[in-house]
Image (cartoon, rainbow, N blue to C red):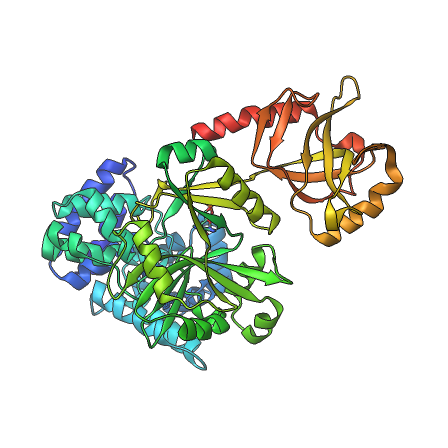
Length: 555
Ligand code: AMP
């Protein structure tokens, strides 16, 4: 297929805004493409992609190289090109204008094809080290040399992954379904397990719906991760599932591990290949896990037995150089909670069966764990697990349906998450309670209040006892002891002086406190010693957040 036909097609698409019409037009084009390699490339190119997102290859061509190639072809100096971009607001349009100039001087002797563009891209992405920059500029100059102005425009946009056609994955899925007479849902499923719409289009063309249905999970090809919905509450979740598999919701980052006996590949939640950033994990996986599997889990960073904020895990993922240093600085462990493949695809087995497989392929070690799972129908039990998770520094719990399949890419009702909502409150600490046993010399829970701005009084909204480390409790005891104004049994009252930032799972109406509200599962985040009592959150804000919860649940 000529690249010109592709560029002309893009030009037509650019004028269409209706998604239905876009899908219909793309379907017409896909139907006409005979060569399957061309079909693969056109699907990706329309989406502004050269490779599927999980492919490690990348063009490595930035704006700088494009400037130089355009300068070579048009003779226009870089400063002038920059000025043109400022005026036109788009490097694609600038390339179009510049190539118009070239046309007057030299005429291309060969027509650009999709195949030529693909081969040049593949060569560019294979180049590394010294001289690669020069060679890339040469290759790019070659492409621009063959391009018409319109082709140059789309070539540039493709290189920059910015096609500006308004075509996303959903439209492409519908177009493929329409072109080859397949059900959209079946195309979607095939996409979720291959993450490559080009490949899905080729299979749909050659083997139809049946071929798509037969596509299965493969090692070293990442699968879209199954996602969770927000649980309305523990009771609601249990009513829905009857019996639930409950696990901690670890505060880390999602990983999918592929291991075939020779090679380990680790993908992040966004399906980026993060294997090279995690060498110690790769070694440990090879030691502890039976090969020919795809596992799903959460990596957490741990220091002195407690999770570090999840951003640390992301820092590890991003690290490209001096990875060794980071291995020591940010120690990781992984908690596996699911399996997608074990000597074959297992996603359609119920969770309870997958769990058995998971337990049979992993030998736990210091760094490799199987997430503890409790099967229960008891609300109290789930609440206890929730508190344990939060006390251990994690986010909450996942409540899963033991009979459910693994549904790639779906945010469904099979997995429900229960965690403290993100909006935190800054509240005044007005009282507390001494701990028990080993903790009897420490203040271990604190009463919190919001501010009533009209009367200036403090209205209690709850009590926080989780989220503290032992050092925190020691520090708080020191801080609050001098503020105690009265004591009754273990209960104490403080002169209001300090503000705590707290997270919580929900705000409820409650007659228990003067504010008329109570925080469910409050969790200490930090001491806001930068805030005075009169800067703490007001009763109006508590009321607003209470109302907002209902809005959020409706979404
Ligand atoms: P969220 O990111 O809030 O939508 O919550 C879902 C995320 O929780 C998943 O993508 C995982 O990264 C994470 N997670 C932590 N622990 C678990 C678990 N036991 N099961 C499933 N997901 C978990």
